[in-house]
Amino acid sequence: MNDKELRKAGLKATAPRLKILQFLAEAAQHHVSAEDVYKAMKQAGEDIGLATIYRVLTQFEAAGLVDRHHFEGGYSVFEIRQDQHHDHLVCIKCGAVEEFLDPIIEARQQEIAKEYRFEMIEHNLNIYGVCARCR
Amino acid sequence: MNDKELRKAGLKATAPRLKILQFLAEAAQHHVSAEDVYKAMKQAGEDIGLATIYRVLTQFEAAGLVDRHHFEGGYSVFEIRQDQHHDHLVCIKCGAVEEFLDPIIEARQQEIAKEYRFEMIEHNLNIYGVCARCR
DNA sequence: CTAGTTGCAAATCATTTGCACTTGC
DNA sequence: GCAAGTGCAAATGATTTGCAACTAG
Image 1 (cartoon, rainbow over the protein chains, first blue to last red):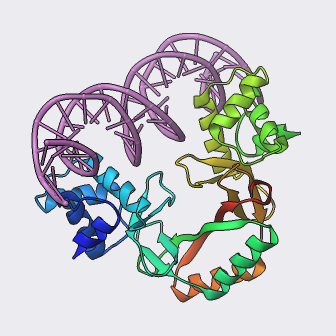
Image 2 (cartoon, each protein chain N blue to C red):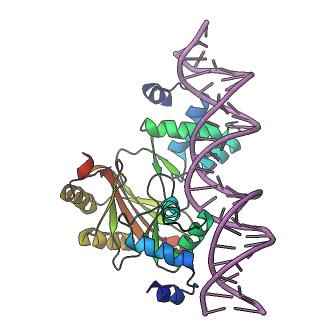
């Protein structure tokens, strides 16, 4: 299963990595902080140090297996890489994150980058507010 | 001059605040980190502690005098509040920041928030890449 | 076997806070 | 004069790193 993915990324298929990757893939809320992963591992009975979580997440990011986001709040949020780029709606009350993709916005971004002669490498759009459930 | 602005925000017009506000208004690159402000103050012969810089910037933000951004990199960037909201093109090579405002994107964001029944409070779009000068 | 990994503790970085001292108004 | 503001040093919270012990291939 994930064994191969790790090997392909030049990473040994160790227990911590497999567990973390599996968790990222299956987590209900798949936008998680390092701390979230740490707690989940602990709860699952896995004895993985926080330092390892950070190292693994950083390696996964470098390998293109996960994306790292810097939402407001001063800490990083990770999510397993999707086939498709997307943007985020972040609820400032409950922390829920919804994803969306708008072709019109995507297209405009390309045009703006071109206008400013910018070689676009990545882009992210975050909408902060209060979600339907929290209003 | 800025005296009034501070008073209106309920802040005493102290030397540190006046100096920092003036710097933010006049800085060539007006997207600066707390450290940037600190160095600039030191260079200008002002003896203002880093803690004060942070306190003042935070108060300015609360007062709506400046905006705080969380670009990639794990630290905050501040800019004096403009009359108009805008988004950013951030050069990952030289750190230059360009601003833009696209009515089409702005409109789409409103619609998307509505679609998801999100009460939008703020939003920001950052395009990371290599600017014309660095290519 | 052995280079890559891990856990733990100590280190680092950005930012915040406690506190005694200063300064606007 | 006195509440608000400041500098400094110590505290914090997120993340990183040094290092000796471990494991995948």
